[in-house]
Image (cartoon, rainbow, N blue to C red; front, side, top):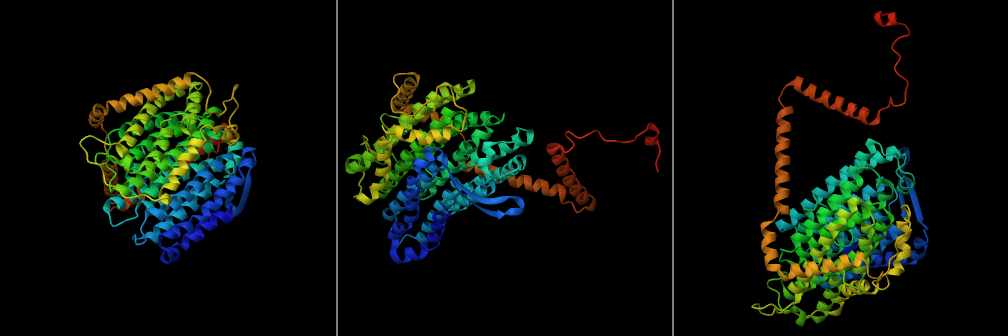
Length: 600
């Protein structure tokens, strides 16, 4: 494991030399470490499905029990295959996407491979502190990748947005990790999940802080403002970071910690409510946009909300559905982003109002897009359908709150169907009154990565049972229900299939009435990411000025009072949360009443 991670960083450091010598063909060499990781993970599939775990650790800071610990189990196996497998295909795609003389190509190539290494280490981490370190490494590399083409103001601003939101969430998460580690007596994740600490108020606060980090990383409302603007990055970055890797880090963390903390009172309300809201808001927003990449971006926001609901529901069948949906989402969203890059490359635009007749000019590209889009709309017999059926079944038999989340999921699925059809129609259909868009030829090497991913979504629909053992090995970390669900393409006619049919019909109706829906969505609009981010920065600046004006008055007494107030407040907060006197005997003030009246 460590050798594979180190290979990513070593070869990333050599990217400049490789690009200088080989040009864009350097991406073919840079794809070797993630390809080797994919092969290694494939070999480990059977062991992970049987519940075996591969571990490695190195004492980093022995005095504080901090170690770099890695662990490959069933959930990590899934994430490694996604991060490494899709990373390999994206790097191969880059060899056709970029020109040899593209500015800053060496830095971009190195950052992309280094991000893949950091993501691999993150999902393998079995220590809270080392997980945080790799978490922030992905944040830094994503900042550099989104900011590629830094001469453009929009790229710089978008990169800063992503960095600000995810870093603040990460810092909150670090505080939560420290509290959990102290409460559990260890920072080893597998040990904490096996024996979680008592749900004290301090642990509840820690859970909220950890959720802040996870939700901000996965662009869950109210932290979803950064993801659409991150589409300023090149298409390979969007396909990898924002469909298969970085935004899944928050989902992964929630899925990893749910067996330990799902019963903490604040967990389920936060996850279910915010996830459902994100699902609806993102899907509604996707119906009014004309940039193909932004349609996919807001669709991604919506589906991340769906994933967080499943991953955080905290029971076995929802966890099984979450694992299937994580795989399904990566296998349809990454190829759709890659196809968008091909259309942009071939036609010179992503504006669906200007695209017309592209499906006739690029029939193979259209076929790949339709295949991936059908999985996104949960059309049988694709993997997206099997995963959505599992999700409906899990939420149907959940708590009352989960049934409310189920209602939101059905509406969100209808929105997904609508913007999926709108995406395919906008990219490839011939539109009345719009001249056919001239395009240039697309080579097979350019189309191969998205075609392979879309084909996997088709194969794993009927073959979803092949993944059941692996996903069940993770899902079985939750208490077993009376009748556990198993993944299969067809479970007969039932309520879940009826809900799927309602979603398809609702989506078709929304698309048929798209003019009315577009007008309505523009009336029921919310502030854009740019305006929200600008207002937040302005409010922060005003608060800083007010605080500075209050404490910096040129008065020594005010300075002393401020210092003492901060120290006293911090100590009282520690005493209030830790309560060292809990369980201790009452304080002994005197042995006889007269002793309290005399001083010696």
